[in-house]
Image (cartoon, rainbow, N blue to C red; front, side):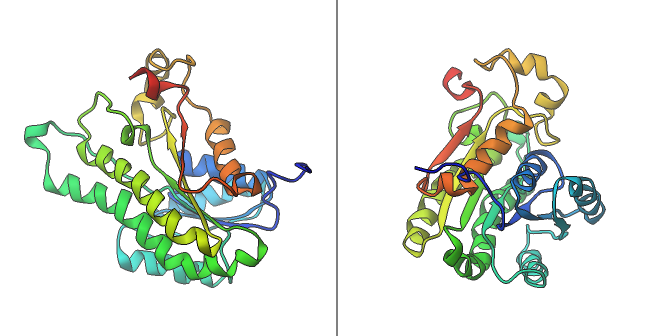
Length: 256
């Protein structure tokens, strides 16, 4: 058994939605360090371009701004990526949104926005990118990695109804997609992060010590925690992880 290059991403291409900040950016940096050629996408073109410029110290990265919450945006991202690459080795569905409101006041708009971006977009973006993933099979197992959340596994204290429902749905969607695509050599899996300091998780970002008190390991997540998990699934090391969701939360799920 030779594991020397088991976690290497050299020669692989990766597309990461929501890659300009937060968990997406952490994953992008980890992929670059491991040798991948990385494309990051974000709705905010300036932020996407700026993140790509900053990440370029770690490797070859390009900004592909797009609003993947709409079919037109998904198709625009496919076209933009196709201008640079003929195949895709790794797709990370990370773009997401959250909405919190009391049960009696929760709005339809908050429900639809979150469900569309968190659950519908990963499916239809993967569907659009599947021909590119199929072209990469000759070089090993291409990967689709869906970024879920521990809120889709256990019930948290906040009234984020559409967010929790979307992430639970994404975990089940990962299983369905995995069973459909595995016979073609395409491996689908997911990551369920816990508390990481991001704009989406302002509690962990602004009150890390307080949040850490509820984590058995005694701290919130670090960039290398999520980066390492993503590299594992994206590399040859994760070739046999099909349809599973890797929980990266310091044990928080078990403490709820």
